[in-house]
Length: 260
Image 1 (tube, helix red, strand yellow):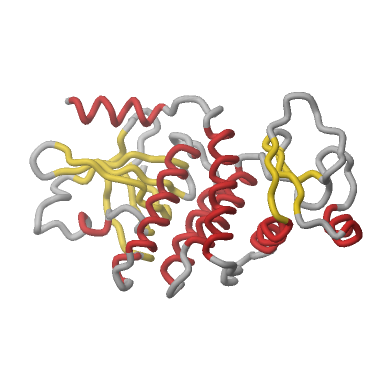
Image 2 (image 1 turned 90 degrees about the horizontal axis):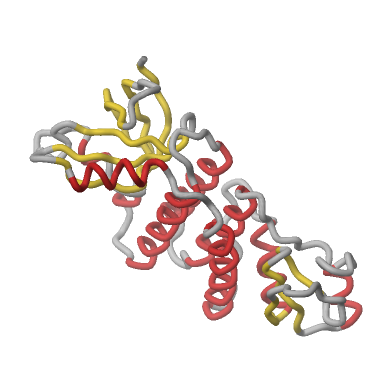
């Protein structure tokens, strides 16, 4: 059947002489692999649209028992290639795409994941500077989509209100706990084997500000060193949970195609 869906191009590989195979995150069908016959030809109209990070409207000839779908037509919705070249912008983009590729599943619909991916690309297109907070924002949203959102309101051990306790105790530092995910107050009874690290309360407040950023509102800003530290913290937390996900069917499919 012929279907139409919005999609984010995650990556593409060369296939035979003039074709290429593209991995998409679609809104309606999760990860889908499509073949663009003649997509690398200079005469191809749709081939240039399938650059990693582009958001497109794709029309597919879709069969449920086919690992790779055929493209009928496509149109461009959003592209970072139209923006001024910026290594930091594209660095964040490719990190987002890599995370999405590992977090999504072959032909398993995940609208929340598509929504935050689309939003991250939109933010990267419209931001003029300070792209790292967008990555931190995406990481925080991603762990929520995966079902591992860290507790930001209450201490993961004592259940005390974090914000009021920090003010009352005049704390400069608290703890980030990787499992269970969230923040903990000093002096709390720590669970055996819990992985924790000490963080400044300013870092906690920045993460709370990121969590409160919705819609197309610009991400909050902080000194670059603080943003980098928050991003590293969230990347480690995200990686711990992504490592638990099973191997994806599409990875085997693409591997076979590359070696064909």
